[in-house]
Image (cartoon, rainbow over all chains, first blue to last red; front, side, top):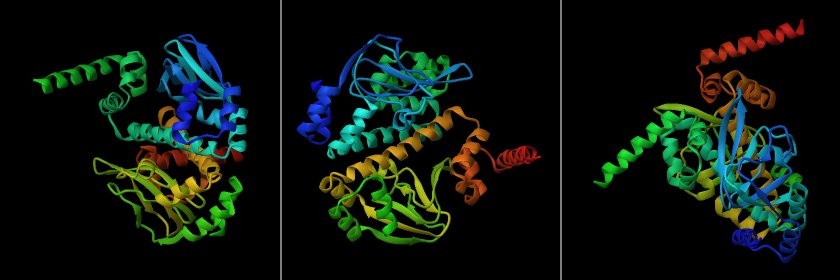
Length: 196
Length: 196
C-alpha cells in the first residue's frame, strides 16, 4: 500500500486525513491472467492502481476485438465514461498477465475529493496525465501510419512492445499480425544497419 | 467576466481569494474570423474560455488540413500537450466566426492551483469533462463509420452541424464534402419519412 501513498504524495503532499482514509479503504486484489476487471455492459465501480502485471482494454466490433490500450505497473485504470458517470461500459478490461491491483470505489474517491481539498490537486494532475495520453492516441490514429504508431509505442512504452502478445499490438494498430511482423523486421534491419 | 466566475462557481464554490485573483488576471480579447489564437510550432501560453463565437482546431498532414474539433460558447480551449508541458504545439486553433474570448496565462493558472486548493476541484472536474470528450472521439474514430460519427455530432453538438462550414465537418469525419452531402441527404430523407 505504501507505493500508492508514495506515488500520490510525490504529486502533491496529501493530508494525514486523506492518508488515513486511503489506508482504511484501499483494497488489494489478485487477478489471474485472462480474468476481467470490467466487461462491456457493466458499470465500472472501481478505480485501480497496478502494483504488478499487465492488462488490456478492448472493444468488440463485428465480433472482432479492437485493443484500445495496455496498462502496466504504476498505471491507473478505469473506464473513463463508465466510471465518471457510473453508466454501463462499452469496453472490456482483462488481465494479460497475473496481476496485483489496488482499488477504491467511486463513492470513496468522491468522498476524498469532497473532504480533502488538496486531494483534488493529485486528481487533477493524474487526470491531465491520462487526458494527454488520450489526445496522443487520437493524434496518432488521425495522423500516423501503423509503422509510425509502432515506433511511438517502442520509444515511449517499450514495456508494452516486450510484454504484450503480438496479436493485441496488431489489433491496437489496426493491422494484421503479418504486417506487424514486416514492420518489426524492417525496424530490426534498420537498427542492424545503423549499428554497422 | 461574471459568466466565467458563475460557470466555475457552479462546479464548486470557489474562495474569495480565487475570485479576486481571477478578476485581476482574466483578460478579454476579440478575435476576428480567420485569425489564429495558436499556430503549429508555437507554445500555447494561454487557456481560453469562449464568451462568443466558434473556433476550430486542426492539424496539417501532407499539406491538407485535418480538423480535430470545434469549440463554441462556454467551451474551454487549450492545446493539451502544448499548454500542459509548455512545449511547441502540433495543432492550429483558428476562429471561424468573430469571437470574444477570456483567457489567463499558464503561470497564472498554476498560481491559482497552488494558492487555492479548492480551485483544483474545479480544474479536476473540467479536465475530466474534456478527457471524456477526447475518449469519445477516440471511440468514434476507432469504432464508427462516418455516418454514425455525423449522427453523434448532430445528436450531441447540433450547434456544430448548424454553424461549422461543411468542408471542416467533412475534414473532421475524414470524408469528402460530396460524401457528407450524401449522408446529409440520406438523413433528411429518413427524417422526412419518419414524419409521414
